[in-house]
Length: 265
Image 1 (cartoon, rainbow, N blue to C red):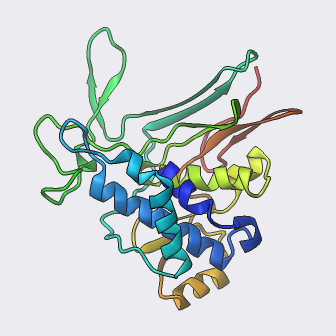
Image 2 (image 1 turned 30 degrees about the vertical axis):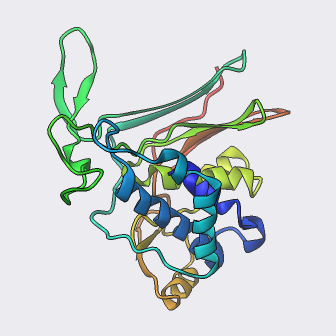
């Protein structure tokens, strides 16, 4: 989903649109909706379904998404739940003195309370993540693995890592990681600025807005025919943690919405 959204958005000069402007939100939200649509249609356990990964992230497909956005077409995505962040997911972003990088997202989703003796970790109980509709890629079936929205990522410039990033946040994870990545790469923000900036999310026809998105922008979205839901929270939609690697040193950023910390040891 992240690669598909980035592939579509590289067709736009996002910086010139203005960060979190009405047009910026419209363009990015439609890319989010397109990725969610494709996830619902095609992503499932590869032992059960043929997942067309290469086609979904191909330049042709991403350009088709971008072209539809430029022509102001709206993707239709049914809304089933709000995808609220889970407190059972942990993100660790690391860069060591030798330059090794790790991004790890560990999630229990819906904890089962079951631990196998001697292993020390709890199994998740995330059957609720399956698509409730029958005969779809993500539908429930015996022995079938479910979709996971975790999105631990490392961004490279040539062979050099420049961003180590990831987040908890249920179905909002990829949307949070996307926006923070754009904040760093397109808008030149520091890592702390990038994780702290107001976010939005569109995993359905509804655009969810954090409470720091101006109401004037929300009114403009409604005038374009979008349904919006405003979160009461100032920081919402995934809890992104990351490291920006620059020629002058490292920048760490822990999402202020939760209990994470950026630390040099």
